[in-house]
Amino acid sequence: MKRKEFIKQIGFSAGAVTFSPLLVSCLDVNSVQNGDFQLPLALPSELPGTNSTLNASPSNIQIGDSYSLSAFQFNNSVPSPTIRKKRGDTVRIRFENNIGQESIIHWHGLIVPPDMDGHPKDAFTEGSYDYEYTINQRAGTYWYHPHPHRITGPQVYKGLAGFYLVEDEEEQALNLPSGDYEIPLVIQDRRVNGSEIVYNPSMPDRMMSGFLGDLILVNGVPTPFHEVGPGYYRLRILNGSNARIYNLAFENDASFTVIGTDSGLLPKPIETNELLLAPGERADILVDFSNGFNEEKVQLISKSFDIPSGGMMGMQNMMGRGFEQGTGFSIMEFRITKSDANTSFELPEQLSAVDFPSEGDATTTRQIQLDMQMMQGHTINGRQFEMERVDERVNQGDTEIWEFINNTNFPHPMHVHAVHFKVLERNGNRGLLPTETGWKDTVLVMPGERVKVIMKFDAPLGMYVFHCHNLEHEDAGMMANFQIIN
Image (cartoon, rainbow, N blue to C red; front, top):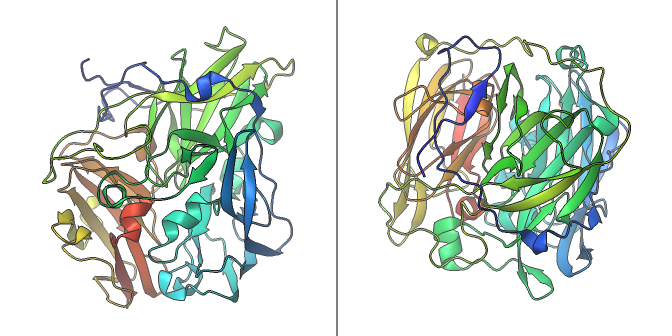
């Protein structure tokens, strides 16, 4: 196989943007559950009201027809309820913790005051925590999940995660597919032992690949199907896995259009036939099932890809279980059997007005070294997380460039709280993935890579965290505090 640039751009002048060929991909795909797409896709309910409650509680639940999970649930629901708000709304949510261990909720991608952000120091074991904040950011596909130190991985894995959708006037003016034509998809992998879904990470899982599974769930359902009609659909996709990276594609190699990323709409739509998505990242895509889909059914798959070598550690996932990182497999099936079709939508050339900061506006450039320390584990700038230690201080209102430098042999999806950033370059060139042409809050840094992002620190004063969103790496200490100061 040869490296190829697999992305085609719509609406940009030739040569304006070059996309990085991160992957070596092919179409060999392992069928999950023999490709028996027998279970209908579950769609999350929406959390009602302006004053809401999220109650986390334990439950033994059935996953499909064959598996059981000792789970945690929000409001006794799988998938967790979706929160849908408008820009300018004041949000009041009470989090009731009844799972028997400490927890706190992080609103991933929302810019809120530090005591509303879900810092691990605010985790509690019994009682409730009241959140109140105003949505003051652009429309986007955000999400929420627990954020206690050392046990974020098992709590997310056992079911505590949901969509947080923000709407605004700019997005509504586009008349994007909605209602039955808007489909939220959270993709997660799970490891099975007989009929039981287990979370029992080994030391190699924690220190190397993260916890990889051999069963793929979409909205909590293994290998589901969903019926659609021959027209446009909006898929809001969240990689809610602990460690697995997906290379999303359709089995027939049909193209689709990327319109949004972590923090909202792209400036212009981009057409592609595959899309890399790391843990914590989101992608908003449009699929026209009347164009390039001649079959009555088609699988959404994860195409195989290679992890670049480079870094200090010379091992891959040799000791891990489940599908290795980069393995191809089936995810779900779309059945193009409905007679109704969304024919009124027209794809615009311009999606969103953006005002990315200029590199010349940056007051500081920081290097963030991602390392593996012997006898210690994964570190950021040579240190593991300590709850009260301030690792970086930034001035409120300043624009900074951060360069993430991955010196390990494992991918690290890096998430920064309280900001949205723009990816500038990868390995010294301007090669970007389609989702990296818009505002981000999580960026994948492959082994041996150097990735620069630019961001302005406009959040309220206080302490926030940034960390690897491979949850086993995060729980093992790959997290740091930064403080926004005057």
